[in-house]
Length: 253
Image (cartoon, rainbow, N blue to C red; front, side, top):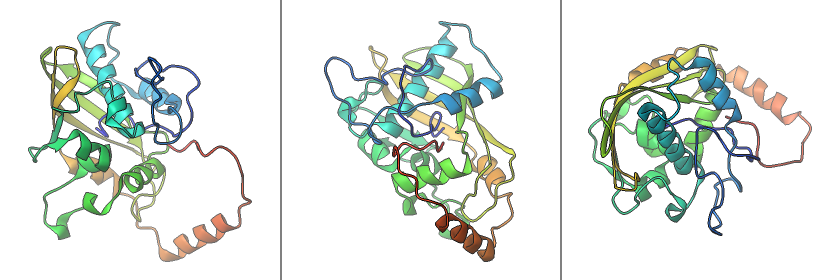
């Protein structure tokens, strides 16, 4: 999971049917990473076209799916823990593949991609070096590679609150360059397992995620290396484009 769907950075003009807490509430002014709440129109379309399960309204599966989408939205787009409604910041821990848990503050600083893709492999075997990426650089790398977004769905829920165990699927289409590799246009995806512990108000206290990173990166590194000449040509073409002044909220995914 970027632990949910990554979204285009554009201002939302209405609510989102899969995510809560996209608006200022109770007179509080939320500090948004990009100046305003995001729009998930593109990734919602990807989700609806590619999901393998459509859960009944009000079912446990739908509730869990939407709760995790809301949590990921806050993690990716809110800059202050005091604005988070989906977690208990004092108790929150995120553990991926058995590694030491990250606090809410650490997770917010790293970003969902770096938290998910951090690895204890030897340096020469790492296909993604999370420690060399910032929140911004990691999100930009995956927005370029997966321009329609990175959709997320619940496949199964095995237990209800307070400890929710579930199986999930994450997918997108490799339609932009990634770390020197040309896009293939093919679907990249992975399946994983997770548990979430919630408090009496259903705020998340503890998250454990298990998945195989090679399942995901195998698709991203399948594209041929981009030659230096191609990179130079791309830079020349980019520099020749006219400057367009407008909203800072582009339609990147």
